[in-house]
Amino acid sequence: MNNQETNQTVEPVTDIQNTPVTPVADNKPAEKADNTQDTAANAPVAPAVPDSVKLDLSADQAEMVQDLLSNFTYAYRSDREVDYKRELVPKDKVGKYPYVAEPADSSIINPVYDWVNKKWYSKSGSISLPEISQTVKTLRSDQLTGTAQTLVLTKSIKDLSESQANQNKLLVSMQKLMLTIAGSQKIDAPASDK
Image (cartoon, rainbow, N blue to C red; front, side, top):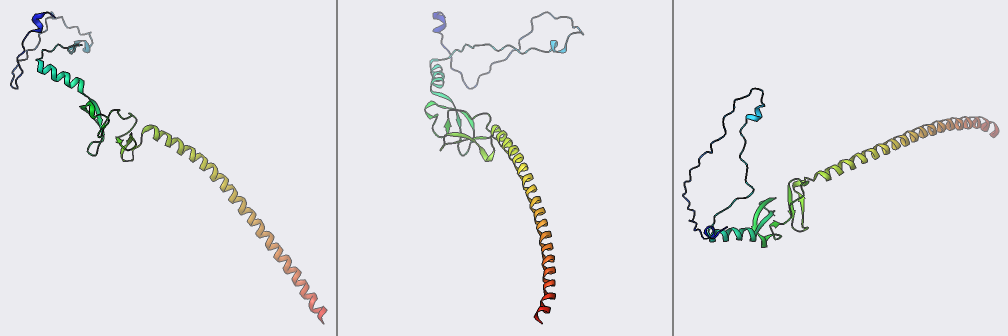
């Protein structure tokens, strides 16, 4: 930059500014259309975005921009009105209610910040995808364990039922035997009493 460029005066921008926009004409010679070309080749190309932009600012405007760049940063708001929102805030407010410096993990569904425990959590009972995955694995494991336990219990109940049936048969046969023995003693008992 030379001295002429740095000492230029810049007129302040007013609210009512009419700047006409002129379309840029294509200065390339027209080519004959080829039917064999791809249709994407004939599509209009978006203008390239420059890597940097030179701004002519007044001293006040430059000071405002510098103030914004040095004193403000992005933080994540989470309070009663807003669950999760990225906002530009003064640096001294970051980390204080309601502005959190760290964004929520992308796996958390509908994030809300817990100011007591200082961590992001999922609002309204929603849980994160890794937690859902772990819950599904646990449920499958529990289902397999439950199925195995059910089979063992069913076999035990069947064995108990068979054992009880056998005991009932044995009891019935013992009752018959006792009746038979008791009947034979009654017949013998009155003969011996006479």
